[in-house]
Image (cartoon, rainbow, N blue to C red; front, side, top):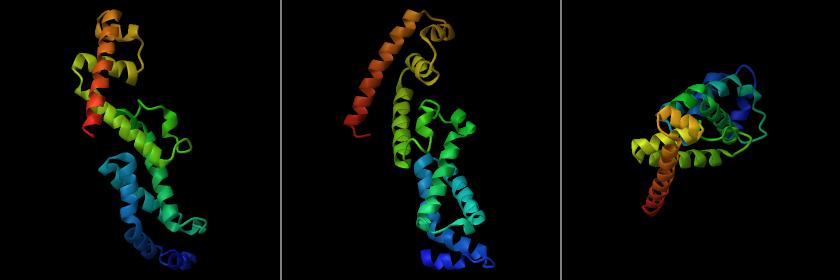
Length: 186
């Protein structure tokens, strides 16, 4: 496909036919990689469309310095990371704000590392959701929203001592839940 594709970079060739061939050849790879990074089917669908629109627009800028597949997957990664950094996803998907912004920067971590970090975060948040409400809320307020003990106490209308006690118990329960899920191989 590489050499075959390069001969069609001359102006005047039907870019639509080339795009159709690229989508046929690399469409599954693009969708799978987008899904691997976002863990969302709807996002992978949207990202795949955006990738091939970008490929269509920038078709004549491909210089052959990397493989064609590598070029397309780089575009996919950039689109997926932009999606993950978007304000909508940060507000809607639990856990995205919880990670440090540096982890979401393309230059600070590989795509694999970002995906592994997201998977770990997802697993931790699943365990948080198993906690009783009174423990879950202090964990979310303390670690997700980074409120102080005084702010959490005011928010929950309880004493700071109660917040500290609940947070301590929540940490112990989280430790037990994580150990249990590790034993079970989850």
